[in-house]
Image (cartoon, rainbow, N blue to C red; front, side, top):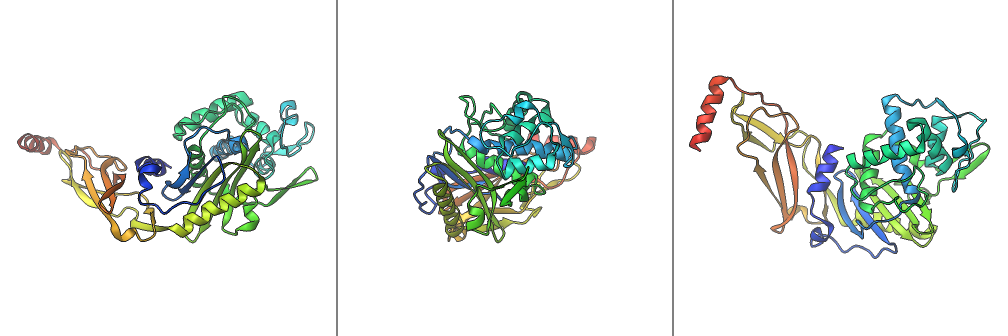
Length: 374
């Protein structure tokens, strides 16, 4: 996840990058954003940083924390959860859990994701943190850690509250984090229906039926938020994420989301510039046990570029000098600057692919003299 955040932060803003991008379609929504999941690049959008009500898109953070608890062993899929009166009486969409009927964490997760059950969210929040209020505090701490600067949570369900808000940018980043950090749980988002308590409810994401490449993610709706959808599709090696907020109907959010995804796949190419751990350069190191350090990217460095732009891109590696030992593997030691048609397009952090310990006393003394002479 760290590479995703660094790359997203290094890219030019959407308005600045628009000079290179294909013309995006008109989208009938309050806000929207198209992101390349592999690189976390924002490819196109409108009002992406405008504060919006997330409605049931909130459940992505609820799920993220539940998945974290499962991964850490604090919860088990077959663990039975006591249903509180608060969870049982939850307003809005429900999976219909009951206080005297045992329900497992696994069942609650499917009820939260497929059926969008507010009762399931509250029961899971109580299982993780003891109460929904305590869980909300964890939600906000995790939002800060993930860099969701325009987000604040007031509940685990998405019910309207003046202090409950986010942005399309933050929703895209959260979705990328969830897909990247929990690949073992992400397939649940492609389930078309789920049956619990003798009640079968369909997934409200219509795109699961309309496009076989779509495998998630989440719908949301309140009167104030309108009809919202975060959709993700993988075609070949590429995965795109579309966030569409505030459309006028269920059908419209599906139509506009598919329009955004099709635009992304048709107007951009995925270009791998460097392999994972491929040395871009050997950078000089002072006071180290070795004179140079290999610099590169820990994962394949793949970007989405407007069709035809790959041939016009230029790169420049700018190292941080003087670079002094010790150097830790993964430490940022340089910046890769990209331009298209000689116009700046993005700057990306380059890491040390190996560690360099401090040299002995004589090596350090010699390099101190070299630095003084330079």
